[in-house]
Structure formats: C-alpha cells, structure tokens
Length: 300
Image (tube, rainbow, N blue to C red; front, side):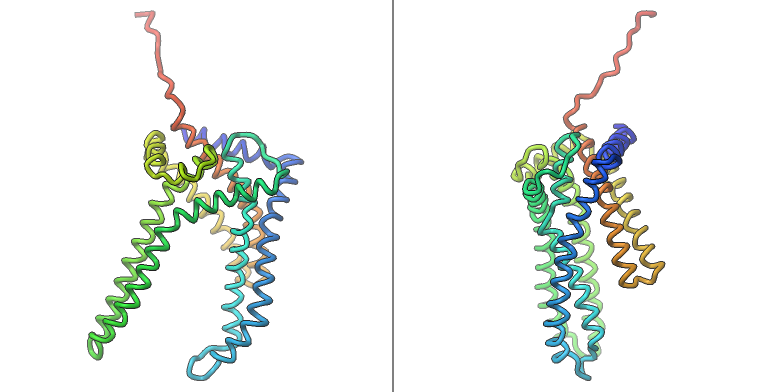
C-alpha cells in the first residue's frame, strides 16, 4: 500500500472542501457550529457555578481546617465550566456529523441539512460511547477495589507499616493506568475502522461487531493499518502541541487560552476532514482487488 497516495488524496479532498469560496463559508459555518454550543454550555455553567454553587461551597469549605480559599474554588469551578462546554459539543455534534458524511464517499458536502448532520453526529457519539464502555467498567472496578483495599490496608498495615500500604496504593494505580491505556489503544484500533464502516453501512450493529471489524483490518493489513493510526496520531499531537505552545507563550492567561482554543477548533475542522478521509481511503483498500503485475515475455 502506498500511504503517500492515500495521504495525497485526503489532502486533495480537504483542499477541494475548504479552499474555495463556498468551502470557506462551509468552514466558518462548521466553526460556528462548534463554538456556539461550547460557548452556550460554558456561559450557562459559569453563571450557575460561580453565582450559585460557589457561595455554597465557600460557606462549607473555606475554613481553617480544610485550607480551601475562595479564589481556589472559583478557579476549579471555571475548569468545570469548560468541561461542561465540551459536553455541549458532544450533545450538539454537527461537526462529527459532517465528518461522518465525508467518509461516505468523495462528494463535497454542504451544510444544507442540519437535522441530518445532528443525527449523523449522534451515530458517531453512539459508536464512541459503545467502545468506551470497557474503559468505564475498568475505572469503576478500580474505584471500588481501591476504596476497599485502601481501607483494609490502612486498618491492617498501620503504624510503622503504613509505608507498605502507600506503596501498594501507588502500584495499584500504576497497574490501573497501564491497563486503561492498553485497553484504550486496543479499542481505538477497532473504533476507527468501525467509524468508517458505520458511515458506509449506516448500521451501528455492524460497526460494533468486532469480528467484522477485525476481518476488515486483516484485509487492509495490520502493518499498514497501524502505520495509518501512527501517522494520524502524530498529526493530531503536532496540532495540539502547537496550540498548547502558543498558550504557554502568553502564560496560559484566560485571553490566551480562549484565543488558542478558538484557533484550535478552527484548525481542527480541516484536520478532522483530512483524518477521516485518510481513514476512509485506508478502509477502501480492504475492498480493492490487488492489481497483478503481469509482464509479457515476447522477447524471450
């Protein structure tokens, strides 16, 4: 497989989608479709958290024995507001819906069916939630076991043996993180192709059938598929690092974080189109018959 050809086609599709008058309008609309839900969620959460929840927490937590401060509580609540803003992006998945449509074929999509994009985006959300179930189960098991083990070890290994209890706590945390990471990587390999399969078939049941997905990956070739995922990961990390670096230059101030997050969303749209088209191209190789290199030997 020539990955350069697949990447070139994905780049060409991205250029055809956005680098024209209609495409720039589509780009801006998609950007607004991401910014408006986030801003709405962030604004609503900020008002509720800062003006209703914070006074209650301050009255309970800002005491000498606990060490909390009003400024610290306000800071933590503002981060929670940002998380709620991201949750609103998940609840109104117009941009993922557009990515979903772009994986169906090479047709340049227009934003003329917001309801269709909304429901397509929720198909993507359903797939993500399904594949996230094992991660949630592992987290809950760890939380339950850690709570039980922590109490039991503190009771048994008290006094001079308390250091052993702490070491066991750190070891269990390390095992949990390794297990969670390995599971996430394994599931991501299936979820990426499952996403394209969902776009092509429209069937969530087929997209979460791991036997079917494994068969598609086998036809692609595990080496080529993992190389594709590595390339995508490097690109996404590079984009994230660039904008985190920009925010750090300005000291992670509120204005710098807001501007950098907005720029990140703006750049994430064509980046997402490139990634989804690249994945779709790799998916297509599983259903393309190899061309035999037949040479004529008439001169012999």
